[in-house]
Image (cartoon, rainbow over all chains, first blue to last red; front, side, top):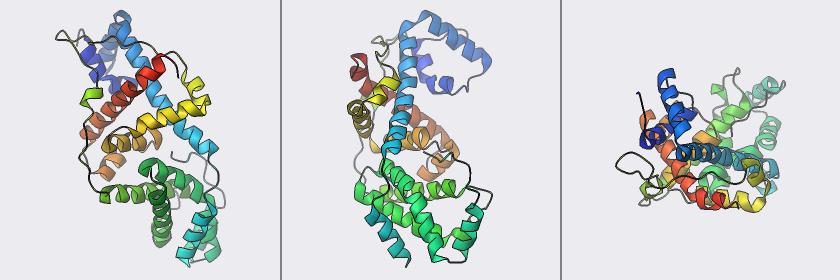
Length: 80
Length: 201
Protein backbone atom coordinates (compact mmCIF):
# COMPACT_ATOMS: atom_id res chain seq x y z
CA UNK A 1 0.00 0.00 0.00
CA UNK A 2 1.87 3.10 -1.16
CA UNK A 3 -0.79 5.59 -0.24
CA UNK A 4 -4.11 5.52 1.58
CA UNK A 5 -7.18 7.72 1.62
CA UNK A 6 -9.47 8.50 4.57
CA UNK A 7 -11.81 5.62 3.72
CA UNK A 8 -9.00 3.07 3.93
CA UNK A 9 -7.49 4.69 7.00
CA UNK A 10 -10.78 4.63 8.90
CA UNK A 11 -11.71 1.14 7.69
CA UNK A 12 -8.54 -0.29 9.24
CA UNK A 13 -8.42 2.03 12.23
CA UNK A 14 -9.17 -0.78 14.69
CA UNK A 15 -6.15 -2.73 13.44
CA UNK A 16 -4.08 0.47 13.56
CA UNK A 17 -4.90 1.25 17.21
CA UNK A 18 -4.46 -2.41 18.18
CA UNK A 19 -0.98 -2.40 16.61
CA UNK A 20 -1.93 -5.22 14.26
CA UNK A 21 -0.71 -3.68 11.00
CA UNK A 22 2.57 -4.75 9.43
CA UNK A 23 5.37 -2.19 9.52
CA UNK A 24 4.98 -1.08 5.91
CA UNK A 25 1.23 -0.52 6.14
CA UNK A 26 1.64 1.27 9.45
CA UNK A 27 4.15 3.68 7.89
CA UNK A 28 1.70 4.39 5.06
CA UNK A 29 -1.01 5.12 7.63
CA UNK A 30 1.35 7.35 9.61
CA UNK A 31 2.09 9.32 6.44
CA UNK A 32 -1.62 9.79 5.82
CA UNK A 33 -2.00 11.13 9.35
CA UNK A 34 0.66 13.77 8.70
CA UNK A 35 -1.26 15.22 5.75
CA UNK A 36 -4.85 14.67 6.97
CA UNK A 37 -6.00 16.71 9.99
CA UNK A 38 -9.48 15.20 9.73
CA UNK A 39 -8.16 11.65 10.18
CA UNK A 40 -5.91 12.85 13.02
CA UNK A 41 -9.01 14.18 14.76
CA UNK A 42 -10.94 10.99 13.94
CA UNK A 43 -8.19 8.76 15.30
CA UNK A 44 -7.98 10.79 18.53
CA UNK A 45 -11.72 10.72 19.11
CA UNK A 46 -11.92 6.98 18.25
CA UNK A 47 -9.29 6.26 20.88
CA UNK A 48 -11.03 8.60 23.34
CA UNK A 49 -14.30 6.74 22.72
CA UNK A 50 -12.65 3.48 23.81
CA UNK A 51 -11.09 5.21 26.83
CA UNK A 52 -14.45 6.70 27.83
CA UNK A 53 -16.26 3.36 27.62
CA UNK A 54 -13.67 1.73 29.83
CA UNK A 55 -13.35 4.77 32.10
CA UNK A 56 -17.07 5.02 32.78
CA UNK A 57 -17.26 1.33 33.71
CA UNK A 58 -14.23 1.63 35.99
CA UNK A 59 -15.68 4.69 37.69
CA UNK A 60 -19.06 2.98 38.14
CA UNK A 61 -17.37 -0.02 39.73
CA UNK A 62 -15.30 2.25 41.97
CA UNK A 63 -18.40 4.05 43.19
CA UNK A 64 -20.53 0.92 43.45
CA UNK A 65 -21.60 -0.06 46.90
CA UNK A 66 -21.72 -3.61 48.12
CA UNK A 67 -24.21 -5.91 46.47
CA UNK A 68 -27.70 -5.40 47.94
CA UNK A 69 -28.08 -7.46 51.15
CA UNK A 70 -31.33 -8.98 49.88
CA UNK A 71 -29.47 -10.37 46.85
CA UNK A 72 -26.72 -11.83 49.05
CA UNK A 73 -29.38 -13.46 51.25
CA UNK A 74 -31.32 -14.75 48.25
CA UNK A 75 -28.22 -16.37 46.78
CA UNK A 76 -27.29 -17.99 50.08
CA UNK A 77 -30.88 -19.15 50.47
CA UNK A 78 -30.94 -20.80 47.03
CA UNK A 79 -27.92 -22.83 48.04
CA UNK A 80 -29.60 -24.00 51.24
CA UNK B 1 -14.04 -5.91 33.85
CA UNK B 2 -11.95 -8.96 34.41
CA UNK B 3 -10.43 -8.92 37.87
CA UNK B 4 -6.75 -8.09 37.85
CA UNK B 5 -5.93 -8.67 41.49
CA UNK B 6 -3.60 -11.55 42.27
CA UNK B 7 -5.12 -14.76 43.51
CA UNK B 8 -5.77 -14.66 47.21
CA UNK B 9 -3.36 -16.87 49.09
CA UNK B 10 -6.22 -18.63 50.89
CA UNK B 11 -8.04 -19.37 47.61
CA UNK B 12 -6.90 -22.95 47.47
CA UNK B 13 -8.30 -23.55 50.93
CA UNK B 14 -11.59 -21.96 49.95
CA UNK B 15 -11.84 -24.10 46.83
CA UNK B 16 -11.15 -27.25 48.86
CA UNK B 17 -13.88 -26.29 51.30
CA UNK B 18 -16.30 -25.55 48.47
CA UNK B 19 -15.58 -28.94 46.97
CA UNK B 20 -16.24 -30.53 50.31
CA UNK B 21 -19.66 -28.85 50.34
CA UNK B 22 -18.83 -26.49 53.20
CA UNK B 23 -21.77 -24.11 53.69
CA UNK B 24 -19.60 -21.34 55.17
CA UNK B 25 -17.27 -21.51 52.18
CA UNK B 26 -20.18 -20.88 49.86
CA UNK B 27 -21.24 -17.88 51.96
CA UNK B 28 -17.72 -16.54 51.79
CA UNK B 29 -17.73 -16.93 48.02
CA UNK B 30 -21.00 -15.00 47.81
CA UNK B 31 -19.81 -12.22 50.15
CA UNK B 32 -16.59 -11.74 48.20
CA UNK B 33 -17.87 -11.92 44.66
CA UNK B 34 -21.51 -10.74 44.57
CA UNK B 35 -20.75 -7.03 44.08
CA UNK B 36 -18.29 -7.29 41.17
CA UNK B 37 -20.44 -9.94 39.47
CA UNK B 38 -23.53 -7.77 39.79
CA UNK B 39 -21.60 -4.93 38.12
CA UNK B 40 -20.82 -7.26 35.20
CA UNK B 41 -24.37 -8.56 34.72
CA UNK B 42 -25.78 -5.02 35.02
CA UNK B 43 -23.46 -3.83 32.26
CA UNK B 44 -24.51 -6.65 29.96
CA UNK B 45 -28.24 -6.73 30.69
CA UNK B 46 -29.08 -3.12 31.64
CA UNK B 47 -32.00 -4.44 33.67
CA UNK B 48 -31.72 -4.66 37.45
CA UNK B 49 -34.00 -7.63 37.97
CA UNK B 50 -32.43 -9.70 35.23
CA UNK B 51 -28.96 -8.71 36.42
CA UNK B 52 -29.69 -9.96 39.95
CA UNK B 53 -31.21 -13.20 38.62
CA UNK B 54 -28.11 -13.76 36.52
CA UNK B 55 -25.90 -13.34 39.61
CA UNK B 56 -27.97 -15.92 41.50
CA UNK B 57 -27.73 -18.35 38.61
CA UNK B 58 -23.98 -17.74 38.36
CA UNK B 59 -23.45 -18.73 41.98
CA UNK B 60 -25.58 -21.84 41.64
CA UNK B 61 -23.69 -22.81 38.47
CA UNK B 62 -20.35 -22.11 40.15
CA UNK B 63 -21.21 -24.25 43.12
CA UNK B 64 -22.38 -27.11 40.93
CA UNK B 65 -19.26 -27.05 38.78
CA UNK B 66 -16.64 -26.27 41.41
CA UNK B 67 -15.21 -29.72 40.67
CA UNK B 68 -14.23 -28.48 37.18
CA UNK B 69 -12.39 -25.45 38.53
CA UNK B 70 -8.68 -25.56 37.67
CA UNK B 71 -6.78 -24.55 40.76
CA UNK B 72 -4.12 -22.74 38.73
CA UNK B 73 -6.71 -20.23 37.50
CA UNK B 74 -8.13 -17.44 39.64
CA UNK B 75 -11.47 -17.96 41.28
CA UNK B 76 -12.50 -14.38 40.41
CA UNK B 77 -11.70 -14.87 36.71
CA UNK B 78 -13.64 -18.13 36.68
CA UNK B 79 -16.63 -16.52 38.42
CA UNK B 80 -16.47 -13.59 35.96
CA UNK B 81 -16.75 -15.95 32.98
CA UNK B 82 -19.67 -17.79 34.57
CA UNK B 83 -21.51 -14.52 35.26
CA UNK B 84 -20.94 -13.36 31.67
CA UNK B 85 -22.38 -16.68 30.44
CA UNK B 86 -25.46 -16.40 32.65
CA UNK B 87 -26.09 -12.82 31.52
CA UNK B 88 -25.68 -13.77 27.86
CA UNK B 89 -28.14 -16.66 28.26
CA UNK B 90 -30.71 -14.13 29.44
CA UNK B 91 -29.97 -11.84 26.51
CA UNK B 92 -30.59 -14.74 24.13
CA UNK B 93 -33.99 -15.53 25.53
CA UNK B 94 -35.12 -11.91 25.35
CA UNK B 95 -37.53 -11.52 22.54
CA UNK B 96 -35.47 -10.73 19.49
CA UNK B 97 -36.34 -7.23 18.56
CA UNK B 98 -35.88 -6.11 15.01
CA UNK B 99 -32.57 -4.45 15.39
CA UNK B 100 -31.60 -1.22 13.69
CA UNK B 101 -28.29 -1.20 11.95
CA UNK B 102 -25.63 1.39 12.68
CA UNK B 103 -24.97 2.42 9.07
CA UNK B 104 -26.24 5.93 9.61
CA UNK B 105 -23.84 6.41 12.47
CA UNK B 106 -20.77 5.43 10.45
CA UNK B 107 -18.59 8.03 8.70
CA UNK B 108 -19.48 8.88 5.11
CA UNK B 109 -16.98 9.35 2.33
CA UNK B 110 -16.77 11.22 -0.98
CA UNK B 111 -16.08 9.40 -4.24
CA UNK B 112 -12.36 10.26 -3.92
CA UNK B 113 -12.18 8.52 -0.53
CA UNK B 114 -12.05 11.64 1.65
CA UNK B 115 -14.33 12.09 4.65
CA UNK B 116 -17.56 13.82 3.65
CA UNK B 117 -17.47 15.93 6.78
CA UNK B 118 -14.16 16.79 8.36
CA UNK B 119 -13.68 15.42 11.85
CA UNK B 120 -12.86 17.89 14.58
CA UNK B 121 -10.92 17.19 17.75
CA UNK B 122 -12.75 16.93 21.04
CA UNK B 123 -12.40 19.75 23.53
CA UNK B 124 -12.17 18.04 26.88
CA UNK B 125 -9.85 15.32 28.03
CA UNK B 126 -11.25 11.88 28.87
CA UNK B 127 -10.09 12.38 32.48
CA UNK B 128 -12.08 15.61 32.83
CA UNK B 129 -15.23 14.07 31.35
CA UNK B 130 -14.99 11.11 33.73
CA UNK B 131 -14.79 13.40 36.75
CA UNK B 132 -18.40 14.58 36.37
CA UNK B 133 -21.35 12.34 37.11
CA UNK B 134 -23.51 14.12 34.55
CA UNK B 135 -21.08 13.56 31.70
CA UNK B 136 -20.51 9.94 32.71
CA UNK B 137 -24.29 9.46 32.58
CA UNK B 138 -24.30 10.93 29.09
CA UNK B 139 -21.62 8.51 27.91
CA UNK B 140 -23.60 5.65 29.45
CA UNK B 141 -26.75 6.89 27.71
CA UNK B 142 -24.96 6.92 24.34
CA UNK B 143 -23.69 3.35 24.91
CA UNK B 144 -27.25 2.27 25.71
CA UNK B 145 -28.48 3.79 22.45
CA UNK B 146 -26.43 1.33 20.41
CA UNK B 147 -28.35 -1.61 18.96
CA UNK B 148 -28.06 -4.51 21.40
CA UNK B 149 -25.77 -6.79 19.39
CA UNK B 150 -23.29 -3.91 18.97
CA UNK B 151 -23.57 -2.80 22.59
CA UNK B 152 -22.85 -6.31 23.86
CA UNK B 153 -19.76 -6.65 21.67
CA UNK B 154 -18.49 -3.31 23.00
CA UNK B 155 -19.14 -4.33 26.62
CA UNK B 156 -17.51 -7.75 26.32
CA UNK B 157 -14.44 -6.56 24.40
CA UNK B 158 -13.75 -3.00 25.57
CA UNK B 159 -15.06 -3.19 29.15
CA UNK B 160 -14.87 -6.81 30.24
CA UNK B 161 -11.79 -7.23 28.00
CA UNK B 162 -12.49 -10.85 27.19
CA UNK B 163 -10.26 -12.27 24.45
CA UNK B 164 -11.72 -12.13 20.90
CA UNK B 165 -11.94 -15.91 20.49
CA UNK B 166 -13.86 -16.22 23.77
CA UNK B 167 -16.32 -13.47 22.81
CA UNK B 168 -16.81 -14.87 19.30
CA UNK B 169 -17.59 -18.28 20.77
CA UNK B 170 -19.98 -16.91 23.40
CA UNK B 171 -21.87 -14.83 20.81
CA UNK B 172 -21.71 -17.61 18.23
CA UNK B 173 -20.25 -15.40 15.54
CA UNK B 174 -17.01 -15.65 13.59
CA UNK B 175 -13.91 -13.77 14.72
CA UNK B 176 -14.04 -11.69 11.53
CA UNK B 177 -17.65 -10.77 12.19
CA UNK B 178 -16.76 -9.85 15.75
CA UNK B 179 -13.94 -7.61 14.55
CA UNK B 180 -16.24 -5.81 12.12
CA UNK B 181 -18.95 -5.41 14.76
CA UNK B 182 -16.58 -4.00 17.36
CA UNK B 183 -15.15 -1.46 14.93
CA UNK B 184 -18.64 -0.41 13.85
CA UNK B 185 -19.84 -0.20 17.46
CA UNK B 186 -16.95 2.09 18.39
CA UNK B 187 -17.48 4.25 15.31
CA UNK B 188 -21.22 4.53 15.99
CA UNK B 189 -20.60 5.46 19.59
CA UNK B 190 -18.02 8.02 18.53
CA UNK B 191 -20.67 9.61 16.30
CA UNK B 192 -23.18 9.69 19.17
CA UNK B 193 -20.64 11.27 21.51
CA UNK B 194 -19.27 13.70 18.92
CA UNK B 195 -21.78 16.60 19.24
CA UNK B 196 -21.41 16.55 23.04
CA UNK B 197 -17.65 16.21 23.06
CA UNK B 198 -17.05 18.86 20.42
CA UNK B 199 -18.72 21.46 22.53
CA UNK B 200 -17.52 19.85 25.76
CA UNK B 201 -20.23 18.43 28.01
